[in-house]
Image (cartoon, rainbow over the protein chains, first blue to last red):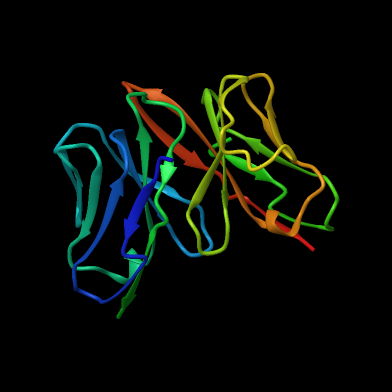
Amino acid sequence: GQQVMQIPQYQHVQEGEDFTTYCNSSTTLSNIQWYKQRPGGHPVFLIQLVKSGEVKKQKRLTFQFGEAKKNSSLHITATQTTDVGTYFCAGRPGSSNTGKLIFGQGTTLQVKP
Amino acid sequence: GAGVSQSPSNKVTEKGKDVELRCDPISGHTALYWYRQSLGQGLEFLIYFQGNSAPDKSGLPSDRFSAERTGGSVSTLTIQRTQQEDSAVYLCASSLLNQGLETQYFGPGTRLLVL
């Protein structure tokens, strides 16, 4: 079936270090979304990527969508303790803009002050 | 309301009982999704509504699970004859297409514990 794999599962970094999580789909995606979930909270939308090779930045966060629209990455520069949480990618198979989103298992980031 | 709301926030039930979970989406959002999240796990898609119809029910784990949406707004997820493996956080999200892009807004979830 359709799968979205995300690595690593856990990442511990020292404050100020960079962090990257990777997302790979078994099928081509129409778009990919990234969410952040703080401990005890619910997922909060970060960004959506639609175009092949697209790169978007939000302050210290950089999101990329692969040329084949099968993989994506989230890179955080100079992590801060406020970055702690679990980051999920979610891909939409096929060509639709709505419907089923397949979530990766998430990468849990811990930042040591 | 300002966001997606879900009730109850917590539910403890005995194995074999039925439970009903409610989701109030953001006003005007046409799409509504149900997900299940087990402890430390990712989100498992359950069902998706567009208006009152459910084009995709492929994620429902068994025929004990059902969901409906009325008036294009409130949705209920019903689990019949609950089992211990049903224990999880059930998350609802609503969304609206804007210029071809869809953003999902999640509710706080219902934490279900089946004893």
